[in-house]
Image (cartoon, rainbow, N blue to C red; front, side, top):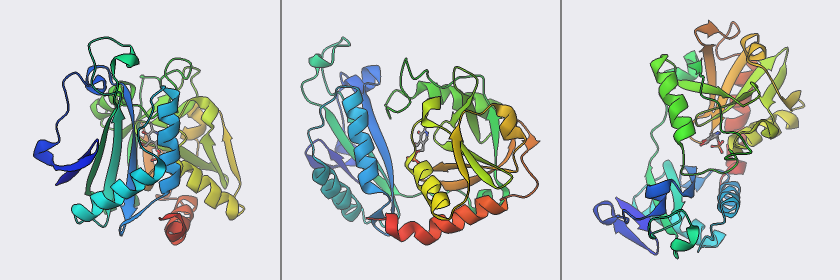
Length: 286
Ligand code: PLP
């Protein structure tokens, strides 16, 4: 397996970084997860734009321009003979002395990993997944903005652990005000009386690229949509609920804390959106 490290492709066993890398020491860095279908990358420009935004929000200068990443991502898939791929770009602050000051690290570390995509079990898309409403709250936007896709993932890891202990596939986090935010690596939607609802970005969530894709597909079809602030009760009374992210696409939710959501899984609106997503996929691939 070939890994891109800083300025070249190396074998996995040679893809080593310093124990003084601030990504390792402090979680100081950003990343993106991308997905390729038949060698073509889903919403490539949007992912690279978000990477650039995350980096700029932590004051990290990326030593690459957009086209450099595109070249590396394509080369990574070629070298590893991948067609349906999971791609991850990680950029850490780089190696430096002990201390929080980013100026200790003159060069960021850039890593691109490409792996065969491990699809979620097909039956999950039919039965839906179980969520646990966790006590861990989503990071306060005023403390560590969820819009930064950062290497510091402990907030979500604590939520995931709590969900696993409760027997959930994933944990649903609320924000500091008690409104629904998102799951540990996905955005959440629910459907009530034909309207598609999702927490607004102002709730303190990552503005998922799949979330935005689903919203625009729904709007193109004149399906009613609303982004807002919602209490968990609204979700528990919904007709349908689903999650979105780049590797999962659209995943129905069966129950939350063992309370079933709606009657049908996947529900008719979720099903329609999944069909729309699949039918329109070619125009999102590059
Ligand atoms: N929310 C969080 C916290 C995430 O980590 C992710 C993806 O990793 C998402 C939402 C979904 O984002 P996207 O649709 O861009 O993959």
